Length: 344
Ligand SMILES: Cc1cc2nc3c(=O)[nH]c(=O)nc-3n(C[C@H](O)[C@H](O)[C@H](O)COP(=O)(O)OP(=O)(O)OC[C@H]3O[C@@H](n4cnc5c(N)ncnc54)[C@H](O)[C@@H]3O)c2cc1C
Image (cartoon, rainbow, N blue to C red; front, side):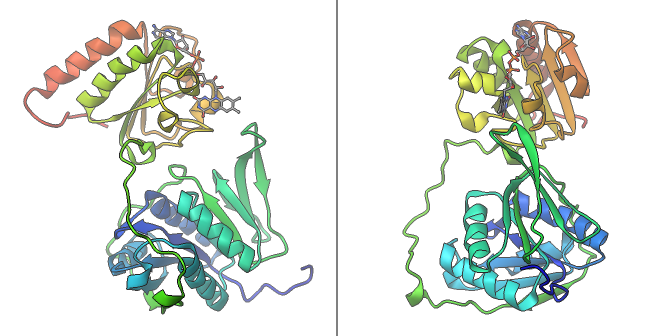
């Protein structure tokens, strides 16, 4: 609504997602990014922690950058359910009026954000990969659009709060700082169990699916592997290093490995300590998903492959010779110890 007065809206709110008292990494990453944006806007950063027995997370949110935490701790909030969770969020947003609200672009984060935005109502940009603010305090929410072919920066000029969900692995979490202090404000649950229409009967962990976002070591392979048997070589290297296997889209499209292993624009965005790109050319759509790894090692027989532009360490050669040799060398170095001493 043009001309509407928004000056009573201030601060940035991060909705922290947790399961069983363990926060999603993306929530801490968003607190890190939220801190940067809040400092730029000279405003405060708050976090909303919802769940059962989650007061430890409220403290952790302060240690990770929040000035204030709204804590809604209650038995009926143990499992994520859209209505009670969105009701808590809506009441906090209506009472404390943050100018920006951010949460992870996880399955539940996207569900919750949509439910809240339609009720307020306000604008929501989903699945952002870049966030910033301009001189008019507008959130610049950027996300890949049009089948990931372009990056669109979306603004919400007329409504508050400005809302966005963001991908995991894109932003940096702040290191835990137990000397930080902040205020924890208890918020009462808004819905008694009798009024909640959904019930969680059981929770089945999807054990088959690999969650690349949370991995410290990823050994990724591409079309250069020549077939699914090439991934067996990578699996051995990954096992020796205590990591998991990732893949380029070419390898996934060829049916050599499932999509949950895919790294890149239409796969996972990862930020491991160590990333091997083996038989991967380094197309921009792949690189955007892994370029923030602390250490990138590329193995490719083509010295001109673009992957060498982002690699910290590059080996030009045939992967079928190099990978088994590397695996053997790591196993030999490992000896009887259970972890490999890797200097990162
Ligand atoms: C909209 C859109 C979204 C996309 N999203 C993604 C995405 O999320 N992730 C992604 O990865 N791609 C994505 N792509 C595809 C991307 O553009 C590339 O096609 C893809 O990344 C190429 O995969 P690759 O590097 O495995 O294959 P190639 O480009 O074919 O590269 C294979 C490499 O292996 C090397 N090689 C071959 N044999 C050997 C050997 N024996 N030893 C050593 N090296 C060898 C070659 O020199 C070559 O560099 C997307 C494309 C589009 C249009």
